[in-house]
Length: 326
Image (cartoon, rainbow, N blue to C red; front, top):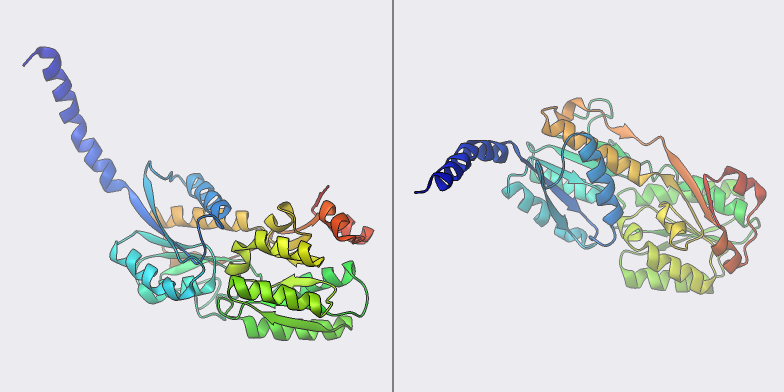
């Protein structure tokens, strides 16, 4: 063997223990989503950012196993069980309470970090916000709590006595009944009727908007739902087709052509989930990490869409907007 080849071989052999050690130190995170890769690309980006801030970079010292239910809530238990079988070091659930519930049912030992839009205590995910207990913690987006705020914004946009519609998904919204009750109570306060339309498939969303137009509603409020979050483009198209002023919880909605959005910053929430995942991979326990409640809310208006819909946006709304898209 020539001297150069021997030195090369020796150098490679010296590196083997280091490589093995690096592989032993690497971690794997399971990413369990009710949605799809296309619909939640921005969520993944925000999660990776938080994970990176916590010292973990995908492909360098952590792997991510993605599982997408493609908006089929019935697939979540199977996907959660698969991640458990693969012995991932933590499971992240970026959207939807059903996903978090499926992960919790699948394992009592693997740490779970969720982002949900509903009260995690009322949903049965944790025992308390400050001391979650067990193997689960995360971020609460408070989507359900701000739904009446969206109704107020629509009422201010389209003052009058005509009905306002609300689109609600009874399948992946465990608080749908409460959401409807709060909307009805709020509608009585503002003195105008609200019409509830249920949808949990793409076809049902289409039918709901068609019926809203026939009923001549004056605005549409989109309730909290992973399906509705993954279909913001489709919902924006339907709103434009039927000339219906619409408000969503995601800032991406007006960015792609919807009229308005009001809600917690999902990018900030998923960044927080990434930070929590990093802390847990370093040894902290979910039971000791309090559930984070979103404090950053954004109100976005797309004025180009307002002009297309021939809607005059009051100066009072424009003054309160965090961002106005021209």
